[in-house]
Length: 316
Length: 255
Ligand SMILES: Nc1ncnc2c1ncn2[C@@H]1O[C@H](COP(=O)(O)OP(=O)(O)OP(=O)(O)O)[C@@H](O)[C@H]1O
Ligand SMILES: [Mg+2]
Image (cartoon, rainbow over all chains, first blue to last red; front, side, top):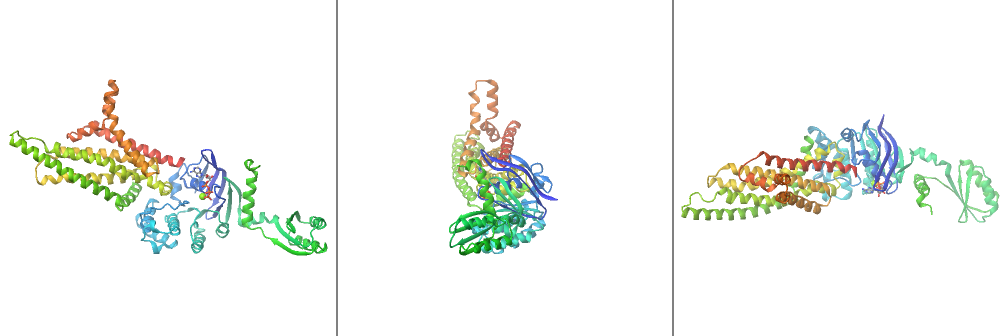
């Protein structure tokens, strides 16, 4: 069953359309990453899913309940970490978590157990009696994560869970999310690519309020496999070589780059071999032949920048 | 109901852990003490004079001392409640904790009632503190409890109005200073609506404004009479402001 179903979601802030027709589904136990540049509409989409903001159009269902018709049923099942951790500075970590647990409807005797569990998972034991206002940003972020976990919700919505954390804590949070995988359905947003690479099974790339790609990590890489790049540097470039390169099967485009060529190709290793052969054969003096692997970063840049060039406003 | 108590418990806990409440309570008790004993001195003086002249009972303890004390407490509550109620919603919005409340399995009505209960308990704690002054005189002199208790029922009710007005102001903005200022303005407006009662030159409107006159309703309580119309008036103001706040909280989602 699909745990989260979002369809036709639209949200305008006055004249600004922050989200334009977003549509996706998340299966139970899946970890999905929202990826997108600043202002793409990731946080807005998350706010709507959690019910803290009403959309201008479209619908959201969580565990089969409509967010607007049965908000309480949905909210019982969701743990949410907003962009800014929603903490009360004047409370201690422990009393704050106890408050959130009760607020989420955890019954009396289970409160302590749940609080202990979330403190342990987020490694907050050393600061449990400290006032939250005296904690560093990274610790406050962890309190925010603990708060989302404390009711042991089926669905976790985490808006930039690793922001403000040091590298070791980032690794810990990633490990934590790996651990939560399976029992919880998780949506997390980030603009850090390695993060989705390590944590998410599926990636949704959002740009300017629209989904520009939605696939598994492997799927995205495969989709881009047609655009393997080969860079060649030669001692004596010339039109003859260029002709020869164009004739190689599998080469899609040849771009003259500084003292060499950049080839975009659709073929496999045989094509690379053929290129090497033809360069050597032309006696242009091969200095360098480098295969550029397209990684997620490039896919991301490609998707988000090509979308931009399609919007009429940016055409000069 | 449980959610309402969880929410108000959190607010009260935080308020009673903050210097704000003790600052206000301290300031109030200093001023109230000074003026209460000044009134008592005046009363003692006046009743000495009248008994020397052989004019019987003389001034009543209730009207000379207690009524003055109660009006003073009323005046202080306008400011104290405005200062305390700014925390109710403005602080939540400023701290971004409103998102936590709005994504928890509680309704806008429960959130509003939680804030209302917290504000009411804090304000009534101050009113109860002020009750100690007249009550402590009981060990020195006999007086009739009736009018005093009626006055305090009035004081509790009017403080309830201030709480809901402050809560409403607080729900409108995340700026705490603006919230206090708006609360003060709304409270002053509450007191001035009745002042139009003689200006309308229309018997029906005059009656309406007279019904909306907070001062005259409050004076009824001080005189020791608890009338249905006065009770209805205060309870209506409290219910109306709570309802308006609930609408504003609900509308937070729509922005
Ligand atoms: N309260 C608001 N009022 C007006 N515009 C808003 C508001 N909140 C967001 N926006 C606009 O909506 C768009 C999407 O914002 P959103 O916060 O969803 O982006 P995001 O993908 O989370 O970005 P980031 O990576 O910076 O967190 C932006 O253009 C932003 O300026
Ligand atoms: Mg964001």
